[in-house]
Amino acid sequence: FSARIQTVHPETNERYWELLNAFKEKTGVGMVVNTSFNVRGEPIVCTPEDAYRCFMNTEMDYLVIGDFVFRKSAQGEWEKKLTFEKD
Image (cartoon, rainbow, N blue to C red; front, side, top):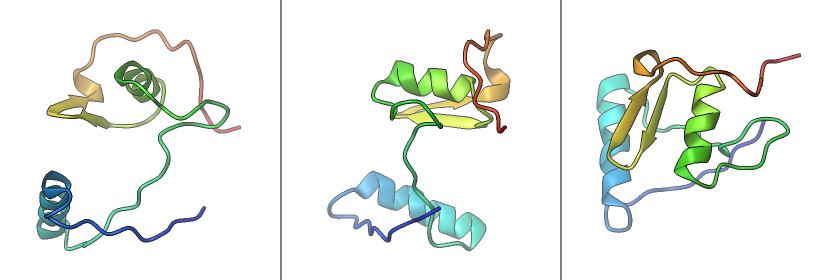
């Protein structure tokens, strides 16, 4: 695994800055780890449809797209057409 530091300022991305500050207030942790949105063998997610398909076919609990929050347990039945489980 690898990570690099990226900073967020309210002047350039106020919404994300507010989210990170709320996360810090709730958890006491002032940072998050960001990674590419894809799974092994698949291209990086490019559309909301790609994001939802990846979300439903993996062990993610939540997906946020713009103003929408999807909770896995609140989604209907989904036929897994892809498996991304560990070998």
